[in-house]
Image 1 (tube, helix red, strand yellow):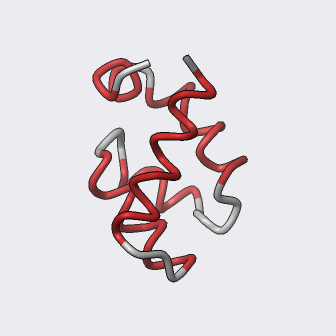
Image 2: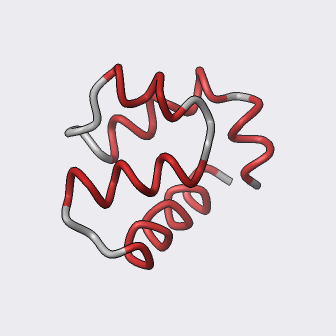
Length: 66
């Protein structure tokens, strides 16, 4: 799965995001709205991850969904 597919199916994908990162609120998910950079920023903010760690976690989730 590539990010264009995620962005196009954000409403379905955001359930997976919330399952993976439960500290993200519905408001966070609405703000993210399929934008990978915003998602990575929210993961960094909520979980104290580095930019690289957040990117790797998003990549792992996308591979699992493929």
